[in-house]
Every structure is written in C-alpha cells, then in structure tokens.
Length: 463
Image 1 (cartoon, rainbow, N blue to C red):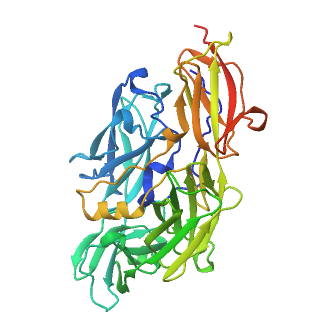
Image 2: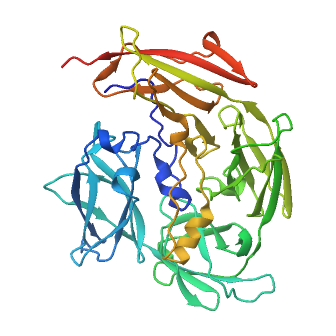
Image 3: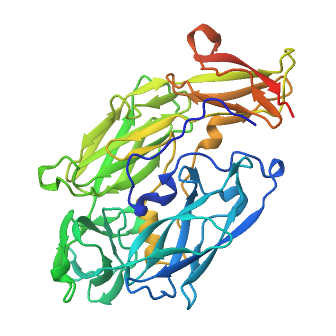
C-alpha cells in the first residue's frame, strides 16, 4: 500500500519527559486495523551498565515510540510498561516486527531510569543476535526543603519538576518537608516544586535556578525553606462570534513559568507546565491553579471552529499573580469529503483517509491538533505508584475515516489551511500525487458549515 501526503512530524526539540514522553513522535503507528495486519511480536535484550561498565540491576526501560517518528502502538501492543533489569543488567522488551502493518521496525525509542543514575534517552537498535547496551552516568545529590506560606515544613506529598532532556524522576522523601534526588546532571537547570491539592488547587513554588557541577559531587547540594503556595486562577472565553451552545470544546495550554527569552535564562532549558480544560456551553473555561509567573500559550478547538495554532501567530498571555482573564479568537473550520474510486470510476470502500493538522507550541514542538495532557498527572503518578499516567489523549481518530459503500470518507472540523492528507488501501496505489485544494471543490454549505470534496483514484498494484 502506498500513501499520499502524510506528513512526517518530527519534534523540533526534545521535551521534558514529565510533560509526556510519547509526544516526542507524531505519526500514528495504530492507523492500520489489527485484523488487516498480522501482529508478530519480537524481543530485544537491553543491557544497562554504569560508568564502571558493571551491570545495573532494577533499572527500568520504558518505550515511547518506534523508528524515531512513530507513537508506541498501544492498540496492538498495549500501553508502554516499565521493563526492569535483572541482576545481570538485562531487560527484555517486546516490540512489533512491523509498524502499522507496513513499516519494518528497526528501533525502539524510550528512556532508562534508576534512582541513583541520570536518566538516559535510548534509541535501541533492534537485533535478534545482539544485546543493546545503555551506559548510565552518575548524578549529583540534591536535597530540597519546602515550607508553606507560614514557614512550616510541608506535610503533604510533593515533588519537583525540572527542565532539560533527562530530569530526575525519583525523589526520596526524607521527612520534615525534605526530598532528595541522586540523579541531577551537571549544569544549569530550572526547577519547581509541585504539590497536588484537592479540587485541582495545585500548589507551586517560584521557578528555581539550580547550578550543579563536579565540585558538588562529594557533598551534594541543599536548598532550604523554599515557599510553596496555591497557584493562580485563569478564566476566559472563546470569541462571541462562535454561536452558542459550544459543543466538544477544549483549550490546551502550555506554560513557561520562566520564559525561554528571559535574560536570566539564556542558554538554560525552559521549564514547561501543560494542562487542558473543557469549554463550557456558554463558551467560558477555567484553569483552577497554574504557576504564578511567566507566559502561557493556549490553543482552542470546538465543533465548527479552531483557535490560533501557533504557526504564524499564537494566543500567548502574561500570567498575573492572582488571576488572569483572556479571550481567545476563533476561525471557522471546514468539513471534507474524499471520494475514492478505481480507474473506471467505481467506488472503493474501506480505504483509509487521514489528515494531520498540527498545533505548534512556541519554542517547543508540534503535535496533532487536539492532543491534550496534564503535567499534574505525571506528578501524581510519581508520588503514588498505584496511579497510572494517562496516555496522551490523541485526536488522530478525529481526523481519520474510512470510505463507505459509495467510496466517500467524511472528516469534520479541519482547519481551513489544512492541505495534506493520506489515502491508502491494501493492494492499491494512488494514481498520482494530489493536494487538497478547497476553493475550487466547494460542494455545499449546510447550516453555516462549508463542505469540500476531492476525488482520488486508486489503481490495483501490479504483482
């Protein structure tokens, strides 16, 4: 099967795994139905060693993707799980021989963690005859004591998030409001204390600058009496030009508590905090508690409309200390009908059609429009191992469809400037490269919604 127009969506930067490691890749490895692609599982052995080349037991490897540019195929393989190394430093990881039934799997993308070592990003080359070795580096001990607004040590569980490619995941509770990580990399970092609260009222510290070097390796670093307080409230609404009631609305947000263009922050990876909330029927929305400083970018979508997506301009706002109020502009979306026929003009049913509209986060990377996640989920899961981190609520299915008996696939709520799309079916190939061109193909306008149609011809592949 050959496809047309499916964009390869690679990340511009490597984000903190805190926000959502599967989002480092942006193609859909589950787009082929399981019944149309026989699943063959294979195993890859991973050897984890320390700086002295000795094996590390009880390290974990967790995959987030395949072949650099594909999500982990949860539909076929189940959600990513942590694979622990044995006494010999070996972990065995299952992976699919084929991605989406059509692409040979050549690598597994994931992260290796251990409480006493710096987390390692691993691109594991698969081989049936050879173990893939990952060497972990020793970190620096960092202790942090947090207090409430009255200066008393925190009594509720809390954690720390940090910027950078490999922020520590394991923080040990030492009691009396103090936690420790032994896996801090050398260099300059941004960090922030996060304490989950009730009713979504998360508490935060101010962004912290942390500098760690070789001189700290023997005694470690201690930061005391860092104050934690309830975050700021953000309220808003989408433009009054959008007819009420609002249906299927959501606002995705990414905040930089200390923006990357801040003069004090040059050359330091920026801390990120992600969140999303539904839009109410009256068009209003509310973020109950966010970090009290920095800038926040928001991308909204609902049935029939979409907000600015960050490509030419975006909806970014300065955060006020106590409460911020915003209004988000919206643009009408379009609906599309892709008609798939053979060379004789007969309809082809069961062909897959898909679009990949993106949302671009300023200075960070891009995702499929509608991808939503909450950074607090990672913090909660870290504090309570019985809690699982929800996989990114990917919206691929919202922009994918199959042709019916008349050869028509219908997709709603596409941004007006979306052009590239994917068409494919086993044993067929596309007659020619096509580009979706809207204006000449206007089919109809119903209840204020514009519907566009594009015809694609598939030919039987020659055997």
